[in-house]
Image 1 (cartoon, one colour):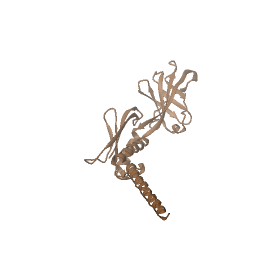
Image 2 (image 1 turned 90 degrees about the vertical axis):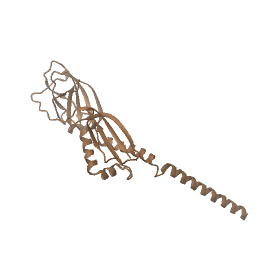
Image 3 (image 1 turned 180 degrees about the vertical axis):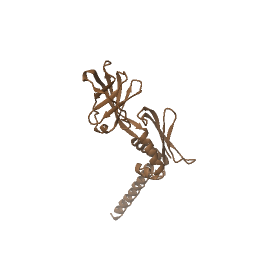
Image 4 (image 1 turned 90 degrees about the horizontal axis):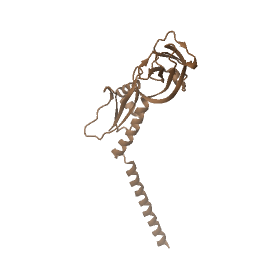
Length: 238
């Protein structure tokens, strides 16, 4: 009986050892700190999300249709659906994307526009839009003379915000990495390329003979001054 008990204890010890070894193999395979590919892949996804989040703004766009017989200088009532837009600016464009002079009185919903004979306009509220046009002599028009045809809330990149992020990158790279929770042994950079080929680049330089992972997204961006276009965001890690 003693022999059988010792035999069982011996078997249990072997099984426990094998289970322990199996756990170590599993842990090293899935959490190997030396697995550069795995670390870079996850770091790229996280870095791209953080960069994108820090350079994005929300805006709300309405399509305004007015009666062609009304005066050019008009005042209409449009209340953005989100309160934060009340402290932001407005941008009004014709169907070809050309800017029309406009001003917005946050909190009142009053939008003053020099429509320049246009009858269909896009009215956009949000961070990045500047309200600085002087509109004198605009009269509130009868609701029967205009229609809000559609509206949408969208997320865009902001040239102002990407400039701010570049400044943070250039002046306190270590602090930005810590803010983004990027591993100490991983580095990152980003670049915005505009339609005219101009760029905003934040890059400490990639050493030779290192593995580099990169990702790209094309998205609408609000340029300084309020004009919108499409641009490409690139993020690299190594």
